[in-house]
Length: 232
Figure 1 (cartoon, one colour):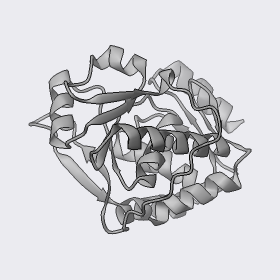
Figure 2 (cartoon, helix red, strand yellow; figure 1 turned 120 degrees about the vertical axis):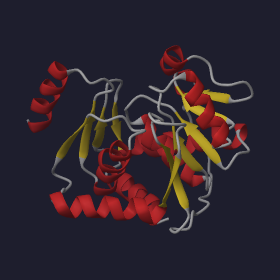
Figure 3 (cartoon, helix red, strand yellow; figure 1 turned 90 degrees about the horizontal axis):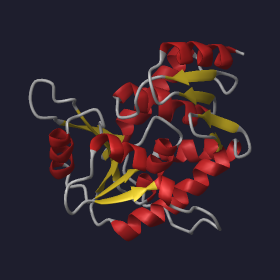
Figure 4 (cartoon, helix red, strand yellow; figure 1 turned 180 degrees about the vertical axis):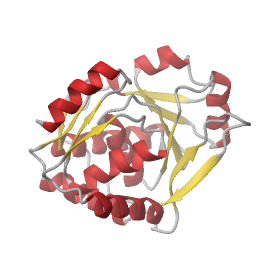
């Protein structure tokens, strides 16, 4: 999978550089790689499904979770936490998800996951120690690498399959169109269950190796301050 390899190379190249600043912490490349390895083991030990739910606030946790899924050859399914509990359960059942990567605050907002679905709460897990050695199970570039669901405004949410090639093409197109480089700093204001929030504001900056600043909530005053900070 070209995109995953590109992102991992970028993270290793920027191992000790700050790549992500979010509401919770700052992330250097090495921190994302370490979390990826630990989380991959937790997923492997908890899940038998080829698809894994990801319900996290907009932050550096999401790309680490996505990379962990890809390391195992699994397909991440970002869950829209603004949906009704009924629609969230529908998506989980429809995608045949048996584990959801999340944090406690998300579950306070959405309520508990459906019966039989395990949760990996990142805020309750320890990721200290040497990262486990887990080989990469490659996802072919023409196969599904991400499953995004529509918001379900007119009917039940519908799953949209994105292949690894789809994602890589989108990343390259945006990178070339706006001429983004490692010297740039981006501001992430969209949730990562959104297609643009995932590709343009998450996967693309990591593939390039530029810094991105996230805000988990859309607060105009805060975003103006972050835009000024990012510009500085």
